[in-house]
Image (cartoon, rainbow, N blue to C red; front, side, top):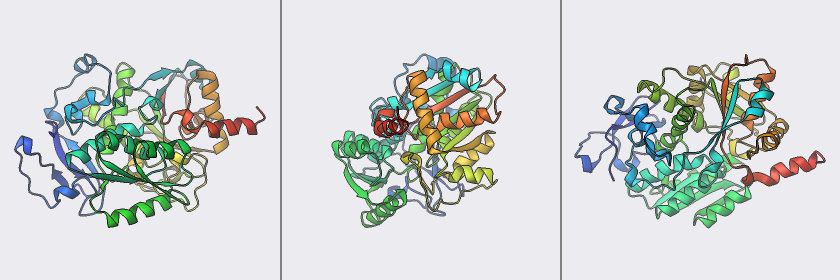
Length: 412
């Protein structure tokens, strides 16, 4: 399985350790301390996050070339991905709709609001972007089994792509994970362990199991560098969808930090390729009951502190100790963005309001984004000229029971 021409290898974002990825098909030779079987995990020197790097000067890509391609999959950006499209484990993920929401724009008092509807991905969430690339990497390494701890959606996605690649999947989820996610992990053939408690308990069970099964290939958000590579394509699509006019702000529900880190990496790559000339402001949207990134941002810290007692209905972003916290904070600060936390009630009300007014279905965790924007608007953050993109990370029908219960509680 070949890597793409510009893909140089892996770089540690903490200590800048680099590894040139060996690829027999290109006849490359590498001298490195990292063995092939651990190359897609964490940095061997500092246990930091590994990130794919590219020789962007070797990439011949312009707007016209991209516009001439079918808008059919994230793999249309092959030059900026580590693996060739013809080797991809894919179900045509990405290429999701960017929907104009004029009523929402009027309510917020801004020029334009658009929702990037990631709920239209094959398994109904943004996780499909990263899992497509990560499972492709796992198969390239000769993996037979893949594993991760998950709040739910990325576990469902991992099981789906593992099944397509003929790999065994092992998914560890907290008992509060949504019924749809848990059901579909099994339907896709995954081996699922439901762990009592919250995400930290699922992560502990996962770590214990992987210590006994060192051949299991990790698919956690930052346990493989390739989830980030899929996530960054979201930015590419947003800018293309706006006809190369980058928005003033992109607001993303934030749990592990993968989404923000991906948006920031995609923006930097497009700027270096001179496809855009500036960066939009990136905003993290979290639930007040579990907002480690918001708290760190508000306190001016470069890293977060784990939330001791998380408590929010937004299970998909209830991650008390996000692996990508530092990267998310860097993305926010370097882009001139921000971080906003809102209460569960406001988040559920935002989901219902968007469904009523715009016809789009957002799961509660996704609705943290419009809830955050309403809070920003009420605080006078906008002057009326802005174009704002909200990321809907999860299809609303995955947690329709939660939204319905909220309505029933309101006497509706």
